[in-house]
Figure 1 (tube, each protein chain N blue to C red):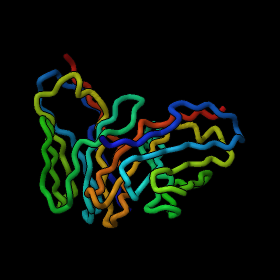
Figure 2 (spheres, each protein chain N blue to C red; figure 1 turned 180 degrees about the vertical axis):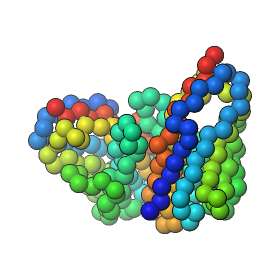
Figure 3 (spheres, chains in turn red, brown; figure 1 turned 90 degrees about the horizontal axis):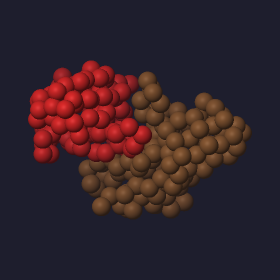
Length: 113
Length: 113
């Protein structure tokens, strides 16, 4: 059974710092991996999707990498800002194409001004 | 712009009531999902549907049913609400055509008293 783990559960950094959020999964046979952002009391916003054949994806200050063989993904946030404060979740699709996701518990990020 | 709309943001229902949570997407996605999100437990899949009138159980289907009569609409039904169903409910949709990027609604906060 696929399990997704995110460490740390919470992170606090000063504004301007570059940071890395970690995601690991137990079964390397994934279809793709997706990173989300969730603000308190809100739904999830998709940030980046990495297909299983890709190694990384970039969007603005965000860069997500994928290493299937080791079961790891990282989300790199450059030059963090207070507006980046949120919970970040990663989720993996299994090998089917139905879109069913397995989520990690998330990392809650606080960026201090 | 992508849109998944959950009709009710906040609901308070009594134990034993029948509860309907409605979700509509405007992207012609074939896949739709219902998750619940609880502190410490993360997001858990209740049901998903990969086509009209098709449904599959997720990880925690007990006490829930779903209906998908039209492609754009996916309803979650609590036949007899119980206090342990107090939670945040999130609807989502995706399409294999667009690489299975999953889009979420804003969430419905349900309190059962």
